[in-house]
View 1 (cartoon, rainbow, N blue to C red):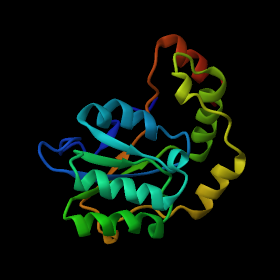
View 2 (view 1 turned 30 degrees about the vertical axis):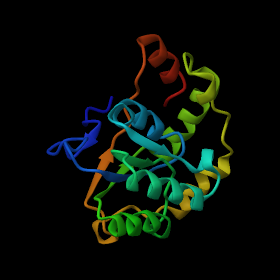
View 3 (view 1 turned 60 degrees about the vertical axis):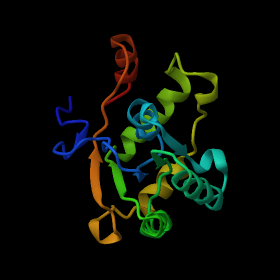
Length: 182
């Protein structure tokens, strides 16, 4: 069992008190990104921006620009954002808009993300129909792994935080999730 805190470092608040910001999530598919958004950012009025829904980077960038210009508390870019060139678009926009940009790097391993992929498609219950997931192909995980450039301060982030995967659910859910973990 992983006893590390969910998010490190723990020395600063997860949600800033009064500053608008852009948050960029970096991590494998099925590493907990959307769950973290739903639990911690959505209740504070952050807008969820996801290329799976919007289909193109250009649409994602347009939503971030509009929301940050016209009143959202923040935007969470919930894509895999696996390389520096992808993240650079959002970092440049944050600088143009004079808002902080933080990165949340999800540390789930390749094997854990693949396991979560199957769990959320086949086992997870009490998930709204709109959030039901299908099995992602192996290429989604291989592609992320081969192209991953871990985020670092030289990219222009105001802060980088690490997110350690923590299963969330009932004891029965945990039993089912753990059944196939080695």
